Image 1 (cartoon, one colour):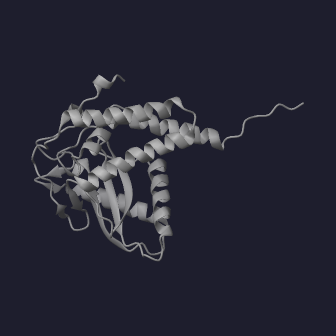
Image 2 (cartoon, helix red, strand yellow):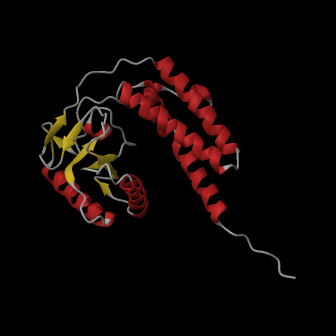
Image 3 (cartoon, helix red, strand yellow):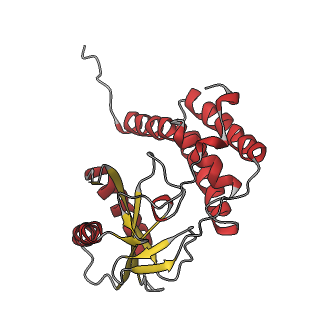
Length: 235
């Protein structure tokens, strides 16, 4: 990919919420019920004796006007995580990754991505909808975001440089550190500004161009190699 192929124009802004999911600014009943079934299945998969569920929410692009064909449905179990059980954070994260890897769940051909969110954790998104209460926690605003295309492209090009270095290397640590750094910067942008932060928009540009998937696949390949044992010649 040439740097000049990167463009903030890859970031969509729609006139309506995704009509496959929403009607009259409310989540469609069939969609809501199906998401509740998925959440229940995920809860059973976690195998935690008492999960202290507070809410089930969707957020991200498909709960706002910034969705595209690449956007998934971010489905969150909002739970109370006791302060004396910090090990649950790591457990939930591992089980979430395992679940998303094991099950390829789609609604209206849209991928569903599961998360476990600590109820004490601040979650920044343009829109957040409660599945349980069937109402908006944070209703998205229909206003075209004001962003600097040059600034987003510069940030995206910087990310591309890091990713390309990782893709050329056989070092697993470098690849993991690169992914972690990009995710950290994205989270920082989300926390400080929101969904239309420069960091988050740059991340979306890269994802739309397939660079994030390439890095993720490279990490999986290196991890598999590190865990494998080659054949030895017998004399």
